[in-house]
Length: 600
Image (cartoon, rainbow, N blue to C red):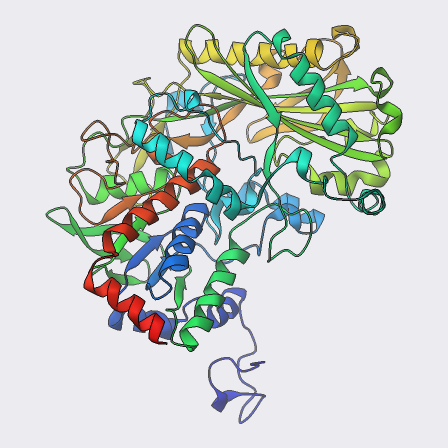
């Protein structure tokens, strides 16, 4: 084990004490990321096959796919932020829940006055970026439904086919497990042991799932339901049976694997540079030639540049770097949210006596407005907790949804109830011309854009439909004795999200200002994909008229639907990697790489 900071000549306190104030980032640079010396060498001496901007889901999906098939590929990952959390914050001790929001979220845009001035019950802002290694993956809810072909309305048929062809591999990478399968392989003795350690997906999951399926026709707008697909499966990195997926540990494991292969001359190191902000892409005649970064200029050379940095940042980067790129930023879509917390007496359910002390259920319900076809879905998390004071920490650790969670105030007053937490997401109309991202010519090029998002009449109709669908689900489909047995939590909304710390239970449905959340999530469509010039980006993931730059993530979405986008992002990124691998398989360089690996 190395205990020196830079070389064997300065080790173990000889001939001098050596560095005494290492920062976390310097420690990570020394082990996993590029140190200043390594970064200087990479910039000045090395050439890469792929340069990836970002370290979230799409970055991992691309790098993993490429290196699994061509371990000799030279890849450089540039991450704008430092190392913050080693994995998903819910996998860490409970106090880490306070890292959600606040300074861990940045807003590299200027929100329009019209959006910011909307009253409660309307769209008021777009949730921000997570500017750290791993990005949003360290703070997401991990819901990963497969959209149906019908739910991918307005998408090119080729892109739909590509996504569906890669859903299996995307789910494998993200460790996606349906909620009703999480504990299915445990025998009774194991289940009894696990139930003492964490909430289990057992009787309540299966019974409520069956109940909703049987009563789906009581929700007029519903189209389908299923056990929630959650990215919580055991992985090599976690070594436990339930953990929310995030990219830091997996990316570092991939980097370690490549370092080992490199030592055996069987692979190339995966190089990662942190705290490296990409300000601008230098280009000539539509060919990206270099990157202007906060740590100096990076020569692109013959590398392919992969934008894996969310939705708004890549659009901002391309709009600043390629002024001739048409239609970028003209579309904007996202998901608006309703938050409802309800409770129903446990004794109303025939299975009440069969429940463990602490059980969870996670169910996904999809629906649509019959007139417009605009989609919504409900992320339903249900908690049965007979001893909330004792189990509060476990409940917070394992709640399926990051934002839509039951508070201690709600749980301690509901030990004789099932508590239903509903995060309801509806799609914002991508055709609304009042929604956009535009350059404003002011400030730094990573944030010199104006963002506007306003709900039009179609959006308001969708919002009404999904609220009605949620109340029908609770009162008609899931309450054995009907609406009179359902109580709702009435709490005050906050500018930053949803507050459930103070409030009261009532038989009245919460009014619009109390149930509709101001913040949008799952933004998309700024660089939508289309055939030919129908979109901003072509079916090969290249922005129109640009040679060596490729786009991943939600910016590609022609329309958002209502489904959670992460798994589909990963699937399409894997398709991009496969396309690029297919393009290079027959080239002399690729043949040479394969031959070198075989001989080694």
